[in-house]
Image (cartoon, rainbow, N blue to C red; front, side, top):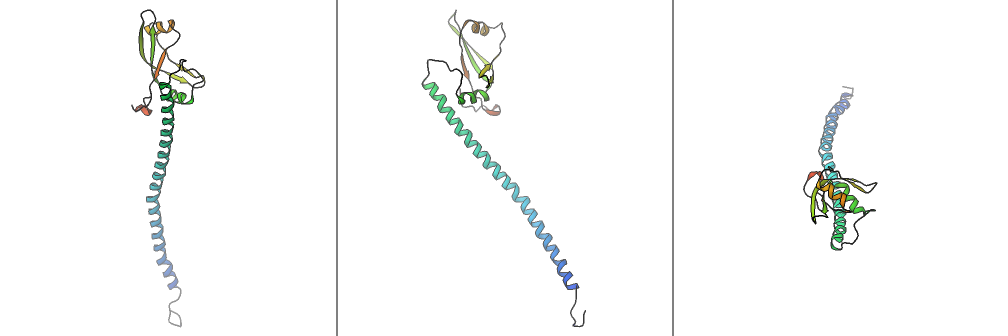
Length: 164
C-alpha cells in the first residue's frame, strides 16, 4: 500500500487477469459460432447452386423436348443428316444405347437390335460394331439406310430418361 492507503499496481494487473478469461471466453464463443454457422452457409450455398443448375438443366430439357417433339409431329421426307442440330448432338453425347432397325429386302421383314454406340461429335458420327456373321450385318450390306432409335436412360444409370 502507498501513503494514501490505496493499493498500487496489483489493482491494474488484477484487471488484466480478469479480462483475459472474458476475452478467451469471447474468442471461444466466436469460434464455436463460426464452427456452427459456416457449415450451414456452405450447405445453403451449395444447395442454392444445385437448384440453379437443376433449373438450367430442366430448361434445356424442355427445349430439347419441344424440338424433338416437332420432329415426331412433322417428320420430313429426308433423314436427319449432319450437321445435326445442337439438341440432337447433346442427346447423342449423353446416351450410349440405341435400337437399330434393318430391313431384310428379300423376305420383307425387319430386324431390331439393341446396340451400344459411341458418338463422335467432332465428326458427327455414330460408331457401332457387329459380327460379320450375323443377320444384321447381312441386311446392312444390302440396304442404304437404317432406322435408329436413341433412348435416353438418364444420367448415372437411373432409368429416368426423357427421350426416345
